[in-house]
Image (cartoon, rainbow, N blue to C red; front, top):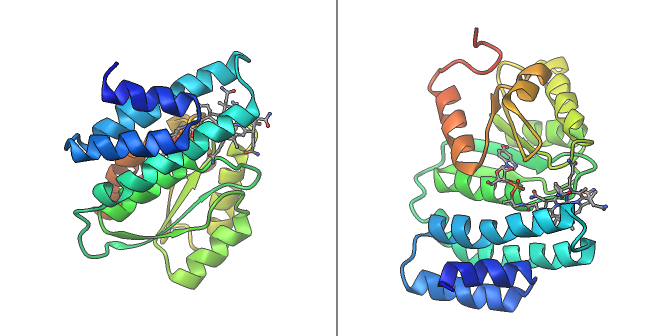
Length: 219
Ligand code: B1M
């Protein structure tokens, strides 16, 4: 089993210290952060998700795997944001109300920081009013929302609607993502962009700031 497969396996087993140790080893061997993330940590988490879905494992096991994922991500973070350039502006980020999943949201935050955004991370279970308050407090130009549950996806629409109601619609651009979220859903709720992962979130936000049309302006 190669090193990345071992990272995936230890993550599957929820062993945070082993994941941290092997991730450090992979970094020392100069494997790229993206390789370690995609083929080690995320590969392991995908297996966890599938086993959970098919009732081969249960919630406490998933929680341990999530802790192990964070242990690896903490070590990768400095590498992913190493080349950060001066700030491009402020982005408010959060997982929407009712949803506790934060691993994907954290990755998106790391990617945004990596290209020079200042990220105001509101954490998980964030109410629409809290997104609005943070935008006002920090003068943010981007709101990034994550949802991993089909039941919490509609909250994204509430946030978009609230920003619109408060007259911030054109000024603050909204980006949504998370496993169950689709481009069609994003368009339907009035968001400016849908992103599949952290890299595409950065691409979409950059494109919006470069004046490219958002989902609502696309024909
Ligand atoms: Co939960 N969970 N979970 N869980 N969990 C899922 C999401 C689920 C698909 C598992 C399954 O059934 N196979 C399922 C949802 C089903 C559905 O709604 N369709 C589910 C469920 C049901 C639940 C509970 C309801 C279980 C229960 O209590 N009975 C419960 C809900 C709690 C709550 O939120 N209120 C629950 C709890 C948990 C834990 C707390 C144990 C833990 C989360 C720990 C944490 O995040 N700190 C957990 C985990 C770990 C998962 C799985 C296994 C893994 C999620 C993950 O971190 N993936 C997940 C199964 C799965 O997704 N395969 C599952 C790795 C991460 C890198 O990917 O988050 O998709 P992801 O993020 C990606 C993209 O989606 C995207 O970029 C990221 C990087 O590539 N992205 C964005 C995400 N946000 C974005 C924002 C953007 C752009 C892109 O722009 C702003």
